[in-house]
Image (cartoon, rainbow, N blue to C red; front, side, top):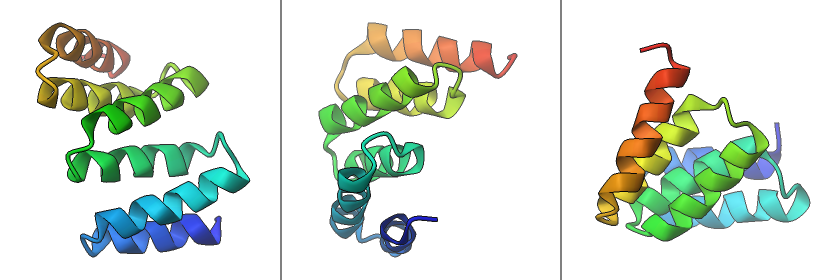
Length: 101
């Protein structure tokens, strides 16, 4: 696993979300489509209240793997926090469809 991603995960688990964002960004500077870094950074952005940044990262994950239910769910939560209810419902519905619910 990428050392930057490993450190980012440690920072995230400690609640150091801004530090996690920096580490995930370093990983993405080396590999712009690193799935783990995009998901993690999106989650860290969400924890920091940077919902549009979270939407962007989750959207990139979905572009890479449209069957990734967690990315759809996470993006729905970010949309919800942006008061974008229509988009939130659409994404949550897609996540549930992918999970077979």
